[in-house]
Image 1 (spheres, rainbow, N blue to C red):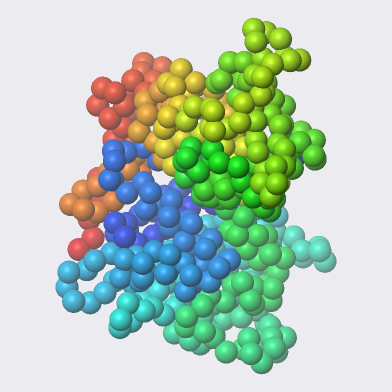
Image 2 (image 1 turned 135 degrees about the vertical axis):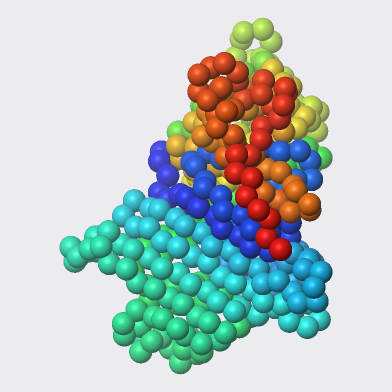
Length: 402
């Protein structure tokens, strides 16, 4: 199990993606998006998911999953569609980079790639040189910039620029090694929306490398954690036992063509014997906590993972355990969560909180106000207490774009 992050997204800039007219968000190892229902927290998360899907499954699939370009771009109301622009800043152990692309609308809900740019700086190359910056950029179907000599190394079919696909997955190798790490980070992001009803039935055996976004391979991942004797397994079980008293282990058995997961319960304080119940017999909160902990302790770790409203169906008294686990897991993976639970944010530092508001139909995101930050830092109030009293408010009241 990896013990430290290999990279982090430090900044996310977005224009005209659904309700996000123009946002500029600085991300931390743990970032908590706090806001009322309907303010656009899920849209912020979906931008990152859209980047992953576009790079790993292709733009066509990513756009169709979201019901077409007209459902993705912000409505202009002026007869001229807005361009969607996404830009990420990343920092790795020996490199830093920026990656982004701009999509324009075409007729009948289609799209085209108007611009794609990846700029990478390697602090020190294998030859001992550094820092060295290389750039890959396309505009409107043409190469604008490539590293010196790179175009000659491309096969003929790659020298043409597509306006309906991103070039990084196929030609990013012409950049220096940092491009591989950047693409690996973006393709290994996980986005979790976990519903108990999807976790209860027996599951078919599936790829156990990473927990899928909906958890439909939970049994396979749990079985693999046991087989590999992952170093995080004991911590995961310890956290689960704190939330669900008496649960101290699990077992995954194959029954026909399906995998059946059972949780081992112990009467009193004994841990050697006790009944094992199938997930179909467990509560919603137990199932959801099991899936969240599996996501946080899976091996290998995700580069970044998001969990939307992790507090759902979990008893408020258990949210302190979940909060501690999230902070510990952020040492291995970058984590972004959405929430409106005062109990979950109660013990968090002010610098991980981002207030999400919607003004005139437009989502705005930013750090909480200086006054609220000072109250938290001076331990006058906890974030949860401020959230209950007045709500966590965004500091920057910048003007909205037209």
